[in-house]
Length: 518
Image 1 (tube, one colour):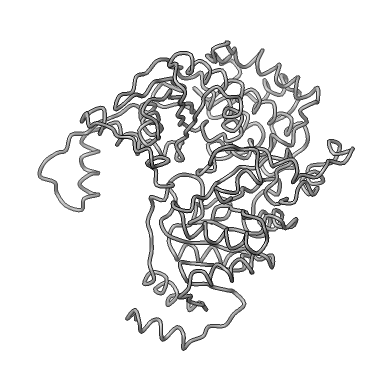
Image 2 (cartoon, rainbow, N blue to C red):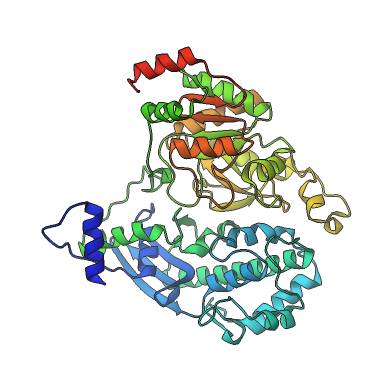
């Protein structure tokens, strides 16, 4: 194993290395915990990590203080909240390890007052998992195949339990599967709440930090904040396994090398808004342009660019917004985003079906100026990493029709629920990204320009990609995605591209000459 790693390091370096570096192997959940605690704004915090499995741990509770992390409780494989949730992801017809957020988005379509949801919850808690008051749990492994098989669960067993066959991928989503999604979401939330309460009791600490794949369940996160178990909660934006690299590096720095840790009160955290990826410049944009011979407009005044883009959003256009450093983690936070008008009742449908090419039921998130959060949402704090779901303010919402729960899925989806319908989910909630003027000044300025024109200080934000592909990284990625979809406009730095325009070749030649590209 070590020889393989050594060979790989030399291959990455591109040359023979004279001295072998010391190789450290931080445990999976220690890396998760380190990724949550060390970049957080807290000198001391309870640590909660929940995922599928890493080595043998699936859930841990710990305490971070100064440069130290102490493990207090641990749950071992095969008992795993992450894998329990993934089993329902699988049974509802979505892909494991990528479809869990779809299951979370489907849950609000369940009928919370129905006997079926109550029945499904009883089955989960009586037959599948033994949940204790402190949040510890054991799973009945006779109903699960994932430790030794190629499926998450036994189809025949689950069909007998729930009276519902496994849904085939891409088939119609009927009400029983929506109710099943709601049932497991509610069970998962209850487990998270009990674990958090135990972490509070064990640490006697007002602050909580979280990581692991389950920490990306922003519905549970929002409710955890509202239930007041902890005064402050901070969640690693790359909460899944990608964030383990950051945590491993932090663990090496503070635990192995014993470097003191400092917390700067003037900073919200050490993640720099998660804008940690590659960035590009005018030469990169023009090199892409030279390859594809694309028409563009260049702006010397960013304020004028924001004004024109805001007008295009007002006109119902969908904008690809490509700026600065790429985001680290699974969320596009305004540098690799597709944006639109949240007030447009057709925008949610257009984005899902004509841009993202994905299931029509899936909701979209708002990017809201940090100063405007309280005007739109029932949330008393920033949410910079799109990891909190909160209700839309009641005075912005419309009443439901009397027969609402009897409507089929898309009848409920397309009901005009608020004055910002494109980002209001069927349960009147939204997955919020707050935009800080200092952290992302260009994105903030665009949204502020839109507010000046409309009175609405937020836009629709979804990741710049299509279903099944990663978020775009390079200018070429962005341009190809732009051209393959029905996106209307692409903004790349200070350059604006529109599909319907013909190139101004003189403008191209002038700019290419300026940058000496050939």
